[in-house]
Amino acid sequence: MEITEIKLKKRDKIGKQYAKKYRRSNLIPGVVYGAHLKENIHVLIEKKDLWNLIKKGHSKEQHILRLIIEDGENTITENAILQDIQIDPIKDDLLHVDFHAVSLEEVVDVYVPVVLVGESKGVKQGGILQHGVEEILIRALPLDVPPHIEVDITDLEIGDSITVGDLNLPENIKVLTPADEVIVNIIPPKGYTEEASTEESQTESKS
Figure 1 (tube, helix red, strand yellow):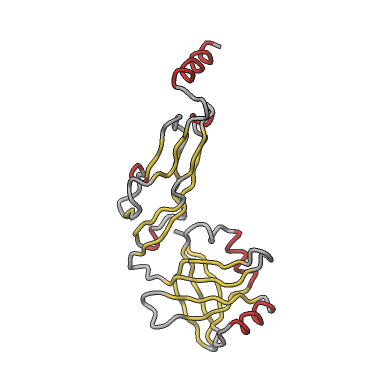
Figure 2 (cartoon, rainbow, N blue to C red):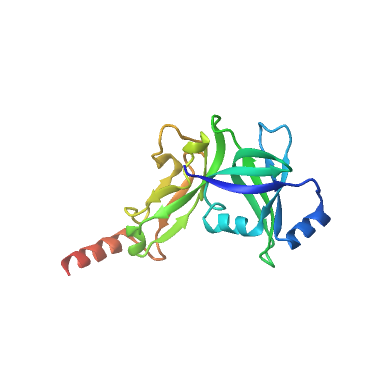
């Protein structure tokens, strides 16, 4: 997994009134937390840098970040995952960001997004695609965590489905989401019958 470096500044002043002042200066308040940290690190990130992370897909996919945190004359370095971003739904303004600090030698439990690829045969036949589980909880070393999990739906016909148990992932990744959870299925359209579908297929093959 590619590691992206991002610069932050440690902040001492905490609270809503200070957060508003920071945001007016295009600095977004955030926090870095993790099991190996003695205490949370309150930080500031340039608004443009956070938007760049979002544009590159870091808010939707899993990527390791190397946080370079300036603390006066000292520098703190932590590896982390972008855990959460709070955005004002009305103004579309960035409000806060959470970073989950991780050790590259210890396994982590993280949710990885599912990306459907291909065009289903069943959808071409008029079926309706239903996307169930959109994230899979896995356990792995941070550098083994994939940005996303691709699920090929090309061969799915009407009535077919793919569950979490059908995924074929590397041995170094343990899936924690229940195997019977449905990722995607193709449901029949209204009035659909197998006989009608067979006749349609035969007609298409003759033409």
